[in-house]
Amino acid sequence: MNDPRQPTLLELSDPARRIVLRLGFGGAFAALMGAQAGCAQAPVASGAAAGARTLGFASVPPSRADRIIVPPGYVAEVLAPWGEPVGIPGAMPAWRDDAGNSADEQALQMGMHHDGMQFYPFDGSSTHGLLALNHEYTDDGLLHPDGLVPWTAQKVRKAQMAVGLAVIEVRLQDGRWQHVRPSRYARRTTMDTPFAVAGPAAGHPLLCTAADPRGRRILGTVANCASGRTPWGTYLAGEENFHFLFSGGDTPTADQRRWGIARGAWYRWGEHDARFDATRNPNEFHRFGWVVELDPFDPQSTPVKRTALGRACHEGATVALTRDGRAVVYSGEDRHFEYLYKFVSRDRMQPGGARANASLLDHGTLYAARFDADGRGHWLPLVHGLGPLTAANGFADQGEVLVKTRQACDLLGATRMDRPEWLAIDPRSGHIYCTLTNNLRRGLPGQPPTDAANPRARNSMGHIIRWHEDGDFDAPMLHWDHFVLAGDPEQSRAQARGNVRGDAFACPDGLAFDPYGRLWICTDIGPRDLGQGEMARLGNNQLLAADPDSGEVRRFLTGPVGCEITGPCFTPDVRTLFVNVQHPGEAPGERNDPADPRRYSNWPDQRPQGRPRSAVVVVRRVDGGVIGA
Image (cartoon, rainbow, N blue to C red; front, side):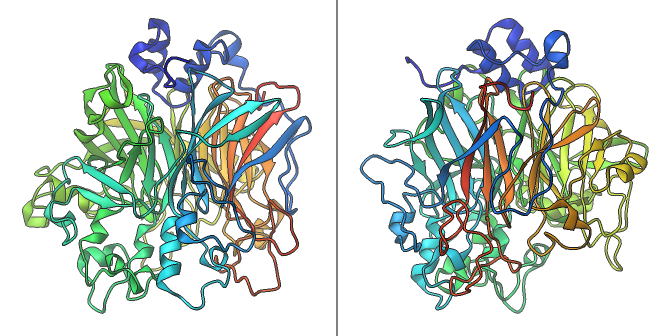
């Protein structure tokens, strides 16, 4: 192969380029890559492709088994679990069954709790490419041989090596996908990895620390959740629940209170690493909560935190392109009553891949969504000097607006949502879909009431909202409806404007379109709720497929005990599905104790005393056909 990178948008043929520019990136770009290689058909709403998104598999029943179940005619195989070496040449420490690997060894291995993931083909191939994924957080009860007690500086360091991003090389060989090791592309970022800072908040006083007085170099990315893939070939990951890492004092600042910084911290890093003590280093807290960008094809490149996209509990970033080639990035903030965002770049995407577009996401306008009761909506610009975003209200400049994105949205009156998580764009219609996982606080005394976009009090089941822009992706207005209110499909048909039918599910989280327009929905019912109350009949978390035209939903995959299903992505020919099984065996308290004789799961190794391990899973059809067709 001459160039391992996929072609950029402007290097595609004119018909292919028009499809992506008209419909946005979404799944269309992946489909066009496959079309160039003679694989998947371009997703246009006519001819064979128009009927291709019909669901062609038998629904699997709910399950509580400690294994993966897929429809007849499909196979699922484990590819890359936590602790396996990523494949950096000359540095491949093997996994130890007792989790006894050192921090330095963990830095060279797959991290914990795989989440958002994207496939990057070599030369448009559907049999050889890179997987870029993130490792969201750690279960320190499993990460260390003796669990949480005693809590030490060494355990903090190992936890910091178990988060971040990973790039691995994979190849289909003799009918099975292999993790290629060693690989010159293999890479791990940890909390020791330098990240550059770019955009309007780069160098801002709120980002400066004693260790980084210029505010332009941050060690590590953490709490990365969903992900996005750009048309210029890079990987995006959002820093989500980073605030759980920071401990505060008795008198938190207004900014810390807005983020819920408390005296204690869930992860207790601040006890042994002063960076995460918000009283001693108050600005370190501002250096997380960004969307980060990484070039998976260049392991020597410096990843970047893109501050123009705002600071939030980002749940990834989904990219579209306007008709004139400007980037539009959608993201949600996965917390109760937080916001949905859209960033529109100032400049157009250029040919030449990652290097030619190294600053594309640094200049543009960030917006927050307001969903009105009449089915219309507005994108509210987060621009210093517009409306209430002035120095008098605590925003000295645009950098401060972006550091305090939440407070800016509060003042603008954006709609406070029920935990907006993943977003996906229908490659045929251009509609944008967003999962709203749940919000048990909605409608309680002292909490925001229900509204048109978030219509259920104590929303335990979640829903999926969708909209289309009033024109191109950069339009200032939108039209929205509900695709589904999760739970009982009959109730959804009565309450939502859609016509969803089929299998029931709860707590939608991960979301992806395949190039044919099938919508893939991952669920994340929390460990306290799995098997309880109205969730009891739903079994373990699952992956479903939906036909947006007919509204039919079918259950495609069920995961092992206690897991979350996440990170779905496809090869260009749609004949391989990669998906992540995150935190199998998660205890009700979200932390395991290795001394506890109970084992909620020992997937995937299935050893009686084995530790459950998050893993990349590969799903294929036995006959080699298109997934879901």
